[in-house]
Image 1 (tube, rainbow, N blue to C red):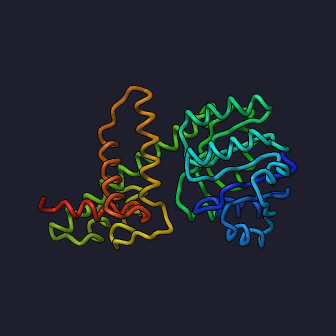
Image 2 (image 1 turned 90 degrees about the vertical axis):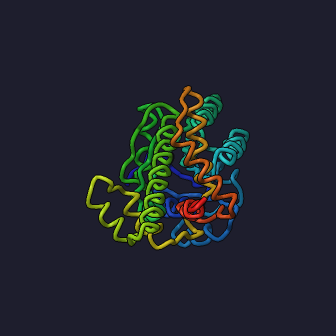
Image 3 (image 1 turned 180 degrees about the vertical axis):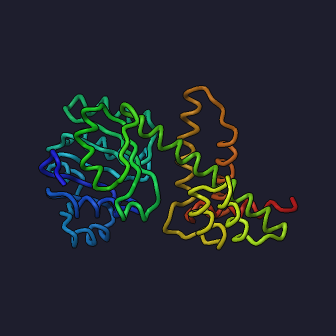
Length: 295
């Protein structure tokens, strides 16, 4: 696949980032320079052809476009401030993390002052999609910038959509996650009620999947996690879900709306984290729901 760039960079090789970077390394015709605080994914990806770097600044010294996949807004801001101070060869920064839209817009204003384009391009779908290169990528950029970076994003996603100007990608992403979390809460509540009423959970969800209650999350988080009560650590943890839904609620506050359903989901996630399930896959809030029985 072709690209307008002579070199690429990737910063942040965590749960999603490692799989995303592996696709960039395998599909890009140009060198890919990478950095992460954890040396293990750097070593694994070096076997595919990634060029590990000892620092963020070293990536910027080598790459014209740098992709970011970081835990959240604070980390995005910290990394971008370092890049602003020492931009090296950078022409484009593409943030694929989930962060506030307001932060994306602020960073874009700062980067353009030094001749660098900032793009927000958060991702949706599960970790396996990151590995398979089948993510949905929501982009905030001008039409011209979008067309320039789209081939690189195409290494990681099958659905790459321009949602509007800078910040629009983050707006769509946090609302996507808000709806997902609320959907999984509804599934968890239905499962808890159904099992308490004597119906087998698998049977319940199999039948729901035949009707209008069917959904992607029913077939994934519902059948693969809620029904077997399997909430692994190496997935999307409760505290990450709290972060993302908080971004959505902050956005609602900015536009003067009061989404009571989303607030209820945020409260459920918070209670689940406080109960000690901070790192488990967030559908673990089923345990919190089940714990309310008889209260």
